[in-house]
Image (tube, rainbow, N blue to C red; front, side, top):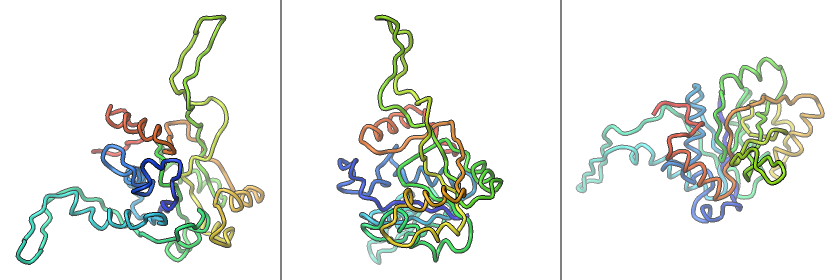
Length: 257
């Protein structure tokens, strides 16, 4: 099953980082968050990726073109320019890097990938969120439901700490707790190829008309993920993820080093 990753947005809410690089290339622990997302899928055996490029897509292309060389030791012959790579990190991945347009909306990007997706079920996620998600169980859930689309529902992390007060006394204090009520779209979709029929132009946002139509036709199910999930919308989010990685407490790291 192929994995589609939306990596073409402008990332305007993270302009401190995205002026020079696309949002999925913002680094956590010295690696782009895009790499972290791909490692999660690969840990469950899903190793063929279709990355939908847009804003600063050449940055992502260069990263993968040079991945093997940059992760290993090199011997360079200055006489003829030959480069020999020694050892280094290797990933058994196939990565399709597809320019889906600078201003194309999320649904339009997915539609443009139809020739590569083919007539097979596929997965879809955003290039800016990590989770301690069991992808295998997600896929099993989707197959059992028999619907066209499954979305991973998550509880949003709170932006501020929470307190329980009694008169002037603090009875409980939790720094940035998980919100107890409500579910939001956490990305990590599993989709049947027929969902592409719900997208008819570059201007279509995946989260609007297609999702609304699938909901109206009772073709959208939700897989509840109660564990860790974090999107990377702001510089504060970046720093929080970096702190987790440095401390060794990074719940989304389900792969072996």
